[in-house]
Image (tube, rainbow, N blue to C red; front, side, top):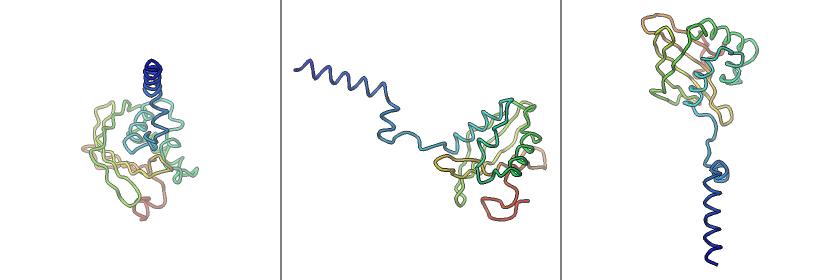
Amino acid sequence: MRIVRITALAFATLVVFSSCDLLMSLLDLGDGGVTVTERINLFEEDLNKEDRSQLVATHFHPEDLDSFDQMLAEITVSTSPFRYSNAPFVIGEPSSIDTVGDAEVATCDFSNGFAVAGTVVFTLKLDGADYKIRRIVLTIEGASEEYVIERYGTRPDTGIPAS
């Protein structure tokens, strides 16, 4: 009888440790979706890929992606300091994440392959369980121009007209 208990305990321990994902899902301890920091990291990863065909569609909030807004965002990404010829891009972990209405605003340091540095501010909103980007403001150190990638129409975080 003791051998059966030891064998059963060993088997149960093996099953638990070999199927942590199953255990996590059964106990609902797994992640609930893509967090703000994870979305920024995923955006950075895709920003450094030569094939950017799904960059905007994958990372931007679907409310902002009617065909015209998506086209404008793709043009802005491809012509701003985010253009691929400036890679590699490094977007640091958020130095702050603040809640503004129903959005999260994350501020990060930024640099690219030409030693251009600055600050990038992401405004993100939940899409189901995943945070998606609503707006990006990139400010380059020593430059007076800001690069804004957002939905054209109303600023999602304020309700005021976009500039």
